[in-house]
Image (cartoon, rainbow, N blue to C red; front, side, top):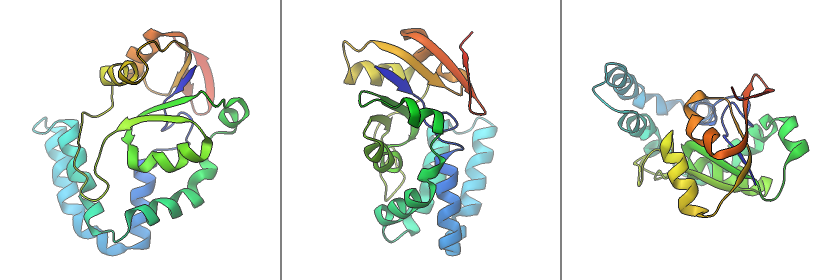
Length: 184
């Protein structure tokens, strides 16, 4: 099986940021959450909050969206074209996307692609995590939880924070600006 990180790997950009901008453009009133998000970012940067605490505060904007599922559906109708052509040309039904992004956001696009998903478990209405952020070593734990005997033939990511996944794959590749290089 082949395993792929999502953001900046098979998706051109950061899907969470793109979804946030999409939501703000469609409903500027969501900017009411912006001061809270900036304050949470500062707490994260000064190591008062961890990444999960920051993200939960960032996701508070979800509280202001009437129909999150409809917004996500419309978002992917417009942003699905940002899936990398190199990925689409080699995609297989046994592929797995593993990401720190919220499952609720990535599930529609991975279902459309016909591939499996492991991602952060976040409530789509409140932004609260119902599990650990699927990042770093947690990706490996979640992978083996779902696929106890899983053997990764090829792993692709844009981030060195995925070194733990790279170590358990037969072959690992670092994706930089759409270019694929052997992981070193």
